[in-house]
Image 1 (cartoon, one colour):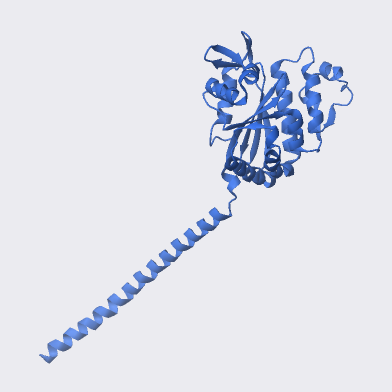
Image 2 (spheres, one colour):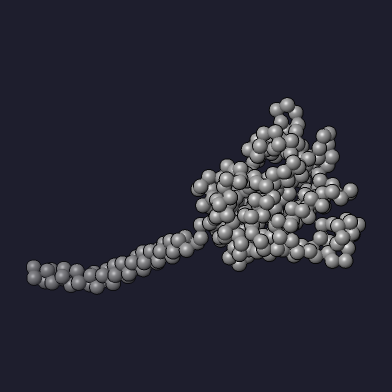
Length: 292
């Protein structure tokens, strides 16, 4: 009896000597895995917190310059891609309307920027997020007095530059206020087509954003200050998110600016987008689409 009991305890001890190290190993590796998961989750949380909100935002705006002959630009502010993209639209652009067709300028002058943005969205099959309309003087005050160096040779022919007295010095310095007069003189050139004038406007606006990224962070606040002089459907929350994105872009290491040019084709009563134009603008207005 005592012998059997001794054999039992010997077997138990041997079993424990084998099992306990194995259990300890399992517990050790399980705790290590749990600790690693907690560290990864903590690191992911820190990364999420440290990423600026503006780095995740994308905004697509229709800018309208109020005048007897209004001007229009599409603007994409792309936080994830650290990019700003312009595309100027001619006022003669034909839009689909309930009664047939109308031009962007006619719609704006008759019914205002909200209706113009609505018909533009219906024509394209995709609409901008919001619109902002103001006079050239108000846009100039929103930007400030910083002048850009603008290479007119990139957008104007030699004859056109000569007509503007820029044959010898093709690079000019323009403030935002002076830019309105320059574009007016460019529009009066005999051979300046709507597509060419739109290209010049897009190139000039993009020059301001390219050469003065440090100005971007203050633009949303400047829009707020000019609230009584603008027409917009941007809400307070929209402006707050816009400010986040502009602040992010103003210091982003990969920040870049570009503008798109339209080919256009003449139609009855105005100018129509080509198929390539339409696809390009749809991509520009699409959410989460990489800006080339």
